[in-house]
Amino acid sequence: MNIKRFHEKIYSLLIPDLIRPEKIKDLRNLEISVIKAIGDYADVIKSELKADKIKDLAKVDPKKEQSFLEQYDIDVLQLEEWVALAKLIVRAPKYRGEIAKKVMLLGIDNAGKTAISKTLTIKYRMNLQAFGQMLKDLLPTKGAVQDRLKVSNVNVMLWDLGGQQQYRRVYLKEPERFFFDCSAVIYVVDIQDEERFDETMVYLERVVNIFHFLNENPYFMVLFHKYDPELEIEPKYQIFIKDLTKRVSKILGEANITFQLRNSSVYNDLTVFNSFTELIRIFANVDVQATINQILEKHAIVSGLDNLVLFDLSGIRVGEFIQSEEIGELINALTIQNLQMLVLEDEQVIVEFDGRYFSAIPIYLEGKTIILSSIHGDPSVKEKLAHEAPTELEPWLESLME
Figure: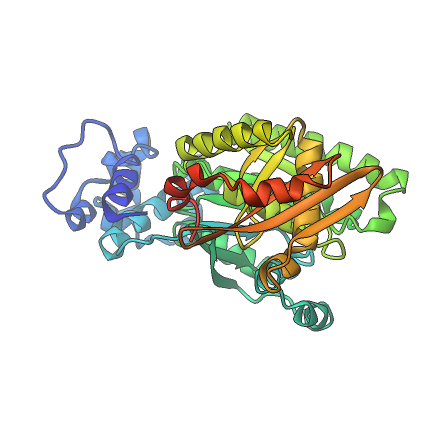
């Protein structure tokens, strides 16, 4: 986020008729009544907590104000939110701008967040030996760990927030440090840990409330994780997923948060990778995306195809013409499985199955390498795709691919 947009988000937390000071740093000296969320409580906070200005409120420790909270029937969480907003405003001048999209990996401990984070990093590097070793050596995340990823044209800062209770307390106590300026959340639920379903739903609800008072509206991808292949045939896990789907949908739906629900397992790492791919696609320019899709549709029809998907070298879908999402997911999975051959060995791929063919070919367009994939009934289509590369895509690739 650039600095100007960041400042606008700060001002969105304040009353609309505020006369803005010349410099953002001067906000700390304003009366606390300019913070929208405080409303009618401004006078009692000033008189009882001696916090007239925003900079004074930022120094208040809610845990030490029990008598004040009881006297005015204020929940400690409410005071913590007001203090968090004050701290955020006080720290605003230190913000220097960040070009990376902030994606948070959240959930309680042992949900599998660290395995997901490592799976994504290693998958992009196509280091399968490291992936196997990672599964053996995983240790719980201590606090907040940040990894910078470059996926297609999108810079991503992946925040893996350790889920142990002592760390969760820190995040919730200082939400302005962790939850502000967040583009998306991957919330991980351990589908095998039935005894902690209530705990993870409570944490999800608390996280959603934090985003609400910070005036943030990130996209949520909720993963029902550790849904390992051998569990897919067990009825009780289908019941778990159905119940959790209702609970998650209620929490996020009531907060007007856009979200998706997916099953995942690091032992079927395509489920993790595909979920992250979908998340990244949200950050793409919609107009450019629509144009690319139209070009692919035109090229597919000319080639006698009813589906055609465009990938970058990371295996991210950056354009598509498909008749059904089921076909899209199948093409996605087959392309990812053959990514090493397509990228490292520069080989075309054709696979026959169930009387159909899967074709994937690397194509070079003015300094860009793309992968075109399709499922069809004619093995000669592969040559047609390679010979009639959609050069119309060239001017549009710059905004979507490295």
